[in-house]
Length: 498
Image (cartoon, rainbow, N blue to C red; front, side):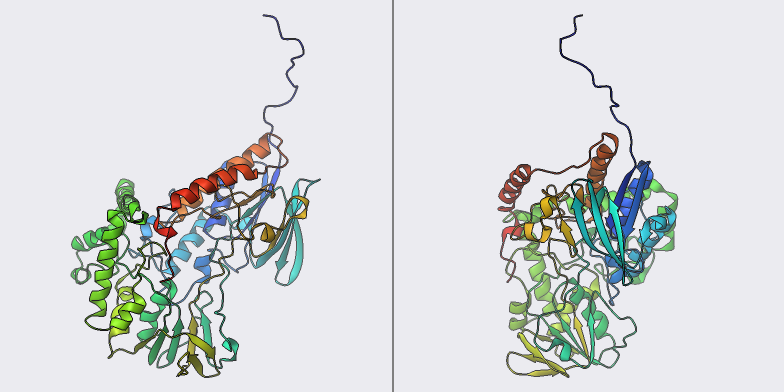
């Protein structure tokens, strides 16, 4: 066989592992997953997860308001490889979810990778070195670090916001934010105002109402308060429960019996089958999110009828103000246990201590809130369940190629490939980025897929001598064109304001 002239095989390794340094921002569900996967699959690496809080768990470390729970069945809200047979309830409450992530970090010895009370301030790409120079605030002290790969695992639910209302900080009573709850506050026999109609407000109201003297709910936006996700399985669990008291309300929260938990611990197949049933149940109904589909129409009809039933005869203004005119799913549904579903009923009942106010708040005084009719609502405690700043650019400064600022690049539209990597920002990855997770089901499986993709990129960089990996803009635009065309037929293309 004659060798072609001029052709030669380079005297180099196909792959030769080099030490690689990774910084991940956050030690919530995403950051812990990065630490676990790196430890499990990589050698010759260094990892630091900088976490701004004094503990792991991310949003579940921060959110401690009364009634805080996940709106996804507990057995679906785990890493796929780390089921929890010991969930207490069908919908897990925040303390138990926080413990799941804390136990996960302890079990797999991830704490050595994590630096707490450490807030990343900036990440600057240095072209000639192929690294990011990272600045961190550690309890008021500036610390400098660097990495080959920078992973943003902060998510969307970490930068809570106050409402923009005149005089907000003139209020002399106790002011709380749902994402920064002071558990020492006692609202028994107090007049409490709650601003918001999202999941947090809907969960807070029935809990505060139990002991408060009066709850004033300022609800300008509409929201679907739906039956529980996985409600058919919830009802089935109740039918077979030996606890007769749990059968009284088929849609109420369900407490797993010790026998059921023991079965889940001892019979892995039984636990798998149960989780599979939950997952396949709500994934098979994805056409709920297809505008005009039979499933979408049926869901709207059923939820609307249920909200009408709970509000009761009359109360037409409340129905007009509270029940949306857009299809369910356009904004995230607010499902949950029976206490959540009683909110419409409590708002409509003149004998309860909950007063709905649909007028706009014009200003806040030292003693209460003034609506646009001029009425002053005097309160002792003001709860702002007003959510988060959902800016797509990270809270900290990120500079990429030629010093471009990510905040500028993301204005007016962010470009992120497959929700994980960004043009002009080599070796930068994000978990749960723009146009990533849909509203259907748990976010954790999406986290797993995204982290696997990111770490495949990192492994190639480590083994194949790749100094910088950067996605081009053209495939991002092509992908966006496809996604945007698909969404034209979805409920997410509807006007969700009313």
